[in-house]
Image 1 (cartoon, rainbow, N blue to C red):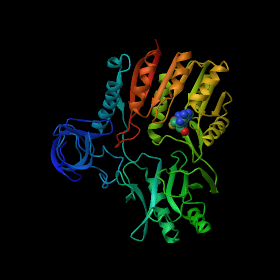
Image 2: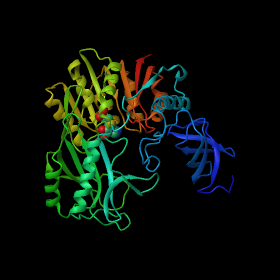
Image 3: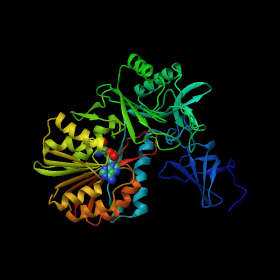
Length: 455
Ligand code: SAH
């Protein structure tokens, strides 16, 4: 190893390809180097940001030879905050990259027949900006002012933001106004260094259909100075805010949400409309972050599932029931499970709200509840799964393969765990196609719908 390389060392580097996290890969004296913000075929002056035994991490100091796909980033904060790795890449190249991430992940895990899977071109957005319906921004005091924003990569240094390329404008408007209110009322905001102050994080979620906004104040203990004045100012200046929740997350931690919440004002949910149905959403419940693409994603999943009337369906990892309830009218019975109790309560309420009587939602892990239902004699004709980034639990896969439902669709938000899970699944199922869809433009994150047929 070259001991002369330290943090800050600069050298020219030719970028060969991109890794699945959106970093450019080059080789410095044969050592693999991941360069954030560098693209294939570029020559950059890389500046080392971390030295590891077997690899280096770096950022772009200067671009010497630019990729034809490089554009001037739209966001002025590009490069300062994490999470928008592809902000300087032409959108068509972002979409090609995401399909390639699926391909790279398959090549790594090599599930049966992987070379022959049909990988469909990634479905993108017409306007790939300002799409996120939720802002989760830490709040800090910077130079005497209350600021919200995102952290610089690999740090807890707050980069204040009043506008951001991925955020829907209403989410930012609410965040900005809240900062103003908190500053005017001089409510102490959290200092990580001193582990003091009340307000840590603002979580703002917008319903596109109704314009309602849900606010959660994550606080360091339940004590919130000037609570009454704060709620009065929110009611006056931000009438679109229909929920004010407080979430208690005391002490220094990098986990955003604490365990206990209490409603400070308004109703505990907002209503979003998807594929013609209304869905109540509690602050703790998951909701897809890109409302424009969500309906496209769900339609892809529904088409892939191709449910026939009178078939039974399991909607695993069901959230507030958005997928299963969109299919209940063509199914004999829908059953779903989900670990967040509030989300399950929402799913049950959402069934009622939409006049659906053949859907049943239960609290529990998919890997525990699914085998239980099988034991009770339930045999689903169709299964749809939409797990978190960790993918499917092996006990879930075991249960699924024990009954081999004829129809099976996997919505994945992580091609790596998808490819891993395919190793077991492809023993029993053929992969008919993998359709990637861009839910997170400007970022390296990639979503895909997999249609299976039984062998
Ligand atoms: N299909 C829903 C939710 C998908 S997100 C939608 O489109 O909105 C994944 C969901 O799985 C989250 O709501 C999360 O709380 C839940 N979850 C995470 N681990 C789980 C597990 N082991 N079993 C069941 N649900 C789980």
